[in-house]
Length: 164
Image 1 (cartoon, rainbow, N blue to C red):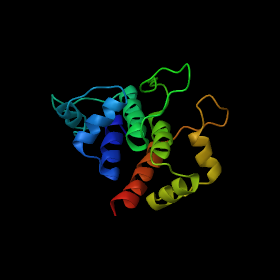
Image 2 (cartoon, rainbow, N blue to C red):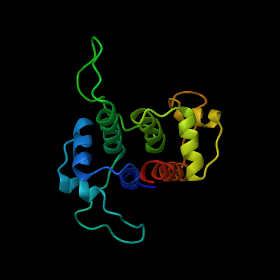
Image 3 (cartoon, rainbow, N blue to C red):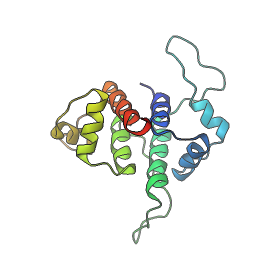
């Protein structure tokens, strides 16, 4: 699953409008025009060649979008003393799949039980411990990298919850 697929599916699941997508990227520290965002949302199959205007998303772009999504949903956070103002720095090092689960959980203020329900609705049954391993810091010894199938099912569950 590509980073562009993640954006496309998340946008559909949560019914995010084009102008809101531009605003979310801006809140995450990246400026894109509406046309550039629409070019990121072009669906491209593996066997066909991408159109010339297609913009391929990297991990930093997805992380900036997810950081902006948290700010968009929850409002700006007041910086603590000694902390710089503005969006958090973008590292682009963590798996976009794990990052998606963590940051959507934060943005939508979901509990672990709600996450498990969403995953169950999407067709995956996992334990609280398995979910905890996915939500951990990558440097933790019990960290588990999240697969594409898991994310697809999570986004399907979000779609059932927020679009039905």
